Length: 306
Image: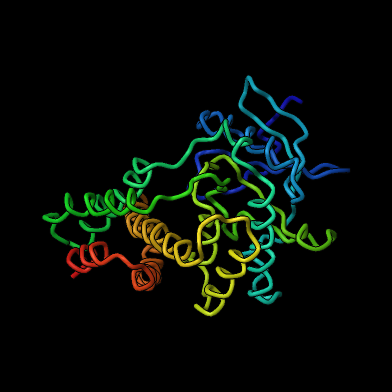
């Protein structure tokens, strides 16, 4: 396949450095993904496809791979992206459909299949929450006097939890990467894309990525119901109390990073749309803190954000 990018429709990919194009074919619509600007994600994408294509879930078929150009040609799942169909479907049913796929993924992918994926570590967490320190606090004109203590509390929290990082994590399991496929049956109606950021980590990482997403207006009743539903139907080794506490601790870290991410993006391009997410992210962060049993972590946030 020789690609002429002038004849392809470019799809906006938000924060990603990869380029995505749509190719309209008489018989089959295709998506062309160009990883040439972010080559390290190319191999991770293909490694993840190798894992997921053997499982009972809907991912796009890969038609062609060009290793020299870091280009992948694959199936186009169409227009019914989850975030675009919320007015047409009950949001709880859409969420449950997504969670059913997470359950299947976690019950069918085992640690020995994940050798080619990176395992999440405290260094990763520290790099992520540093966006909060580097961008959100200066944006809010907050003092940096407690920054060192902030990292120390997080490090102690991380290593005291004894996380079981044995599970496949998509990492970007959000409505923008999920498609409704009406011609499929059951859980296969949920099509999943974008695998380049996958890693080995906490069982419910993808669960809080979707349930606690600041872009979605979801009730706490839905969240708690689906957290318990996921736990009861997944092969998770820890007791529910520990699982739930770890869910909210790592979710706290993710929301902390997002506060920094919104302000970082605003600083970069000046789009005020990013600032619209700050209040809801801050609200979700406070809810997350109320659901963890860690006085030192709660205290450091109270002191920093006071």
